[in-house]
Image (cartoon, helix red, strand yellow):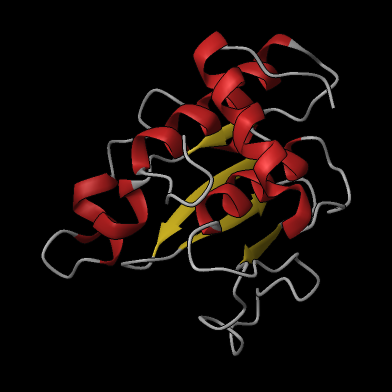
Length: 162
């Protein structure tokens, strides 16, 4: 993975699946669920909508989960919506802060990217930090490290301890 490339949906799905797997293996983490990267696109499409995704959770009790990740792809930009079932709130994380400043769920304190290609990494990190109930402490300066770490974690199907 080069340092200036966008993450595609497969990388994001793989990384979020690792977060879910980690939450299932250890009581140290809140129980997590992730929607596929196509969930938001399908549910927003007037020709598809709810009918196209209604069966996606038929085998999962999402109300038994504590945190739910909803990757949001806005044509050329990744964001992350996170549903906190414990606190009963939805937060929307945008590393460019320009797509949703009027949104009541917009997380004002999230780290901001300084280029046009790191949004996927930022979005994955928003989910990873939420999966540990950790404060957002990373910055743009940390992103190359996290890109390499994500490659290792996905290739080894194992999350490193933070």
